[in-house]
Image (cartoon, rainbow, N blue to C red; front, side):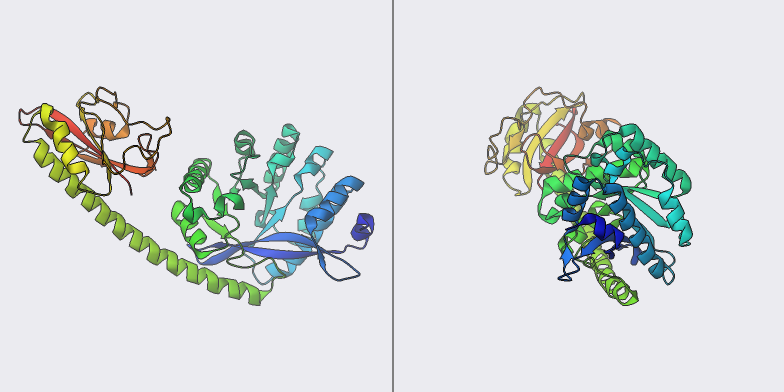
Length: 402
């Protein structure tokens, strides 16, 4: 494979993959994905192989520019009929280390084809850049031109959060490795929610990449993804109005399914909270009839009656445990890893939200789901204040496995 001939003869074509918004039921943009065609067989050559050979031959900048030129040229024909679309343009960011920060190639290219920089998103894989200062200058220069910036492949080991935040991206694209089977993996869900929280704080939108199933799409939306991309909606291909329409049908479908699933989830959450509240009220009625010495006996009775209960424990009004954490006998000690341990009598829980909210005057508190340090399971903690038979104030805490 002769890379120089490929570049000279401009044997690069562009496939596009839609990036969609289920909430607005629209295709927001198209990611340009370069492909090379073998002149002898007519088959597509895997692009990583081509770029690897370009690196070996010292033609990275030339190949990258050709890919951008072909992408912008092909997008120009599409945007005439779909003027609101964004072009997501991959930049082989290793070229930043070669001193192309202020060359003006991209801004001149889009201007020549009457594309506004505001309609172009430059995707940056920051891990490929060694020169941090050059990366920062590149981002600042192109932001001043009006281009949008996206950080690609967030969520994998090579991503540097500090450098990512210095870039001040408009969009964060979460790597497909994190999205794959996210509907079945609580750990991936928690990481994804953390990235969503980080993105909200810096004002960036989040794209969930690599969506291949309906469940991955629905869970990504549920967790807060703004935009979706993947084979579920459309494989990379040459785009025209017909393919955009076919994608719109898939978007409409997932939007309706998300709406119905969200309504179902909200109803289930309300029923679950109502159930938790009933359990708390039942236990508190019993506790209010006895003194502290009998608390653990009562907790042992009730913790085994409800399958969703993992632990019951009681704090005094200073946040100290006045009982051990009483566990359902069928669930205790299943997780033997030493990092997980339940609070004991006398443990100080005064910095936990389930104490602080009650201390601040909230009548009842229910936490968001979190990983329990007592059991290693996903957990929701409910807390409520009560008085024993002598009028002394306490706080009942219950850990539920949702």
